[in-house]
Image (tube, rainbow, N blue to C red; front, top):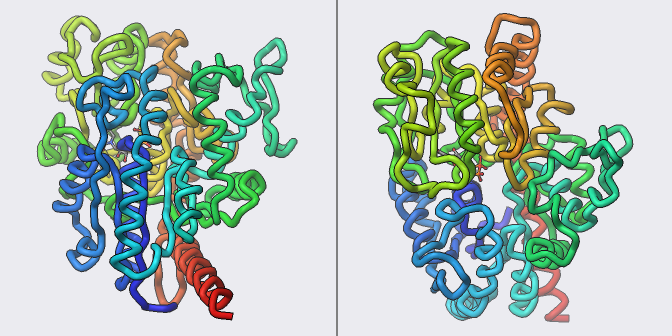
Length: 508
Ligand code: UDP
C-alpha cells in the first residue's frame, strides 16, 4: 500500500449517532494509514463535541494528531431551528427535517475548505466521505476532481431498506392488514409491516417535506464512487447483497465502528470521554453499582441520543420493570410531548418508583447521558432494551449481549426485523410511540430474554456467536486480517488506484 501523504475529508450529519461513527472511522483510517491526514468538517458546536471526545480518547496521540477538525459556520435560526441548535439531540423529531434541509447551507464554506486543502496539498483530497444524508457533496467532489464516497452509519440491511422505502414509498400499496413487500428485497424475506415505519414515512406521499429532502439526497448519493457501511460482511450477508444491489456500487463493510475499538467484557473499567451531553451519572458510579451485581444479571435500557417513549409507555415500562425483579439501569429522558432536555417530572413514573428502586438497590435511573460503553462491556450486563439504533446494536453485539427491541424512528424498525428474523438475537417489545403496551407484556418480554428459558439461552448463544464474528472482523492476528480491516484496506487501495488512473490519463 502506498504510504504517501493523502488527505481525506469527512462530512458527517449533525447527530450524535452519526458523529460517533464518523470519528471512529477517522480513527480507524488514521491507525491503518499513518501518513494520511483526515479532516472532519462540521458546525462549530459539533466540532466542540468532537474535539472533547478526541482530547480524552484512549487512541494513542500519533493517530489523533492526524485528525483535524474544521468549523463550517452555521446559524440555526436561519433554518427555523431554535437558537444555537446544531445537533439533532436537542430537537423534537418534527424539526429534524429542518436540520436535514439546513445542511445544504454548509456548502459554500465546505467548498472553501476543499479549495484551501487542494491549494495547501497541491492536489485535491483523495476523497470526500460524506454522510448518506448529505447527497449534495457528490457535486462538490466532482467539481474538485476528487471522488465522493457515501458512508452509511447504519447497517447494510437497515440502510438498504430505509433508502428503498423513501425512494419507492411501497407502503402506499400495503394490503389491508398493513403488509407490503419492498423492492430490492428477495422473496425469502418476510414482508414489511406498516408499523415498522416511522410516522413521517407512513404519512409520506412524495410531496411532503421529508420525501422532498430524502428522495433527491438518496438519488445524489447513488452517484458516489462507492459506499462504506458500518457493518461486518459476515453478520449481514443478506443486507450486504441488498445494499450492493441498491447502490450498484462497491460497498465496503468496515464496521461495526466502535467508538473505542474492541473492548473486553469485564468489570470496573472507565473507557473515556463520550461525544455529547454531560453525563447523567459518572462512569465510576455506574461501574461501582454494576460491580455489586451478579454476573449476567442486569438489563440496560436506553432509547439512544434523540428518541424517547410516550408518557403511558414510560409508566408501563416502569411498572413492568418493578414486577420482574431483575436489576436494571435505565437511561431516561422526558417522554414525548415534553422538552427532551427539560426537568424530569416525578409524575411520569409510578409514585415513589425511583426511591423504591434505589432503596432496594434494584434499579439505577440515569437522567441524561449514560456511559453506554462501560455498561455494555460490564460482565453484569446481560441484555439491552434498545431503540435499535445501529451504533447501539454494534456496541451491544460486540459484547455478545442479546437485545429487546423497541424501534422508534429512522431505520430502527428494519434493524429490529433483521435482529429478530435473520439473526435470532432479539425479541421486539413493541414499536413506536403510539402503541399501547401493558406492564404484563413488559414483564413477559423481559422474562423471555432474561429468564432461565430455552429462548433466552438460545439468544445468548447466537449473540455470543455474532460477538465472535465481530471480533474476528475487527482483528488482525498471525497475518490474518479480519474482513472489516481488509475491506478498509481494499477501499483505500481502490481510491489510490483511481487516483493513479486519473493522473496517468492526464499525462498521456
Ligand atoms: N449513547 C450513550 N449514552 C446515552 C445515549 C447514547 O453513550 O445515554 C451513545 C451510544 O453509545 C451510541 C450513540 O450514543 O454510540 C447512539 O447511537 P445509535 O445509533 O444507537 O442511536 P441514535 O442516537 O442515533 O438514535
